[in-house]
Length: 329
Image (cartoon, rainbow, N blue to C red; front, side):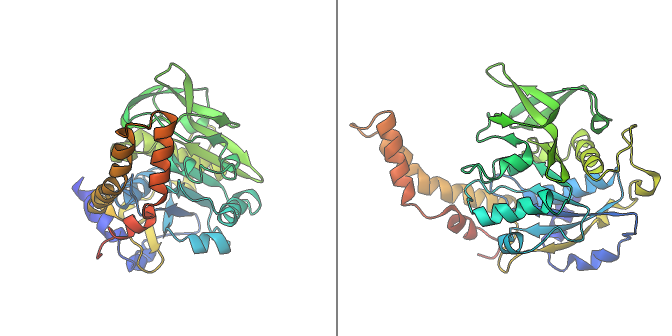
């Protein structure tokens, strides 16, 4: 993991623009990764890990846009890119204007799109986001080893074992589904849940997977191959044999595939230390609500739940707690 630790530090520097000379050509796919500072996921580590792993399978370069909601809401941020990759976690966000413009990039402007893990739980308190994804979910089972099985035959599954177990991940509970399943997994209640799929959103293709919670999943070579194949499919570059065209063959030096990182002033990845800080602050803030309402002698069941919700409504916003844990604060 040491090599990724070093690379993760590079991505934290806004001056990574010098990497833009690392060799992108006319035959290189251009991708924009939209991501978050990372409270429940170490995006500081996962972003470069995933980018390098994808580049081992196709010729692609990445720009990274970190928590830039103003840009995502007010601009055609997909312009100049062959594919968008959403690897973010914005569960509490409900802004309809933001959601509408993000969907517009795919459904109206036709930019092929890949959606990963917590992107499905983003905007989950609305019904405005999931129709573009093809799968709706609001909850997941506890992190555990997850056995994946093919749901059918498709070139996107080339190189993916028919029986594939991830060491640690979360199984997202499907509420609605309107896509073409690729992978499925068995839930604790015995039901079958889709974990990877294809979808048509307006005039563009979408590939999605609910997998990708842990660092071990993101570093898994089969997971990286799955995402690479999904990118090739949505961009129309995946052959029937599951391989890219020769001109999109994998790059040699995957250390230089992230060209730029952009973020609003004062915003950065939390990293592992920031995650621990945020969890500690959130626990200290929320804990009294759970303990006080659970132990209240006259509040049971629904009354205890209502007590907790009322208590939580007076707490500092999660964004405020997270901001206090950003590097330098």
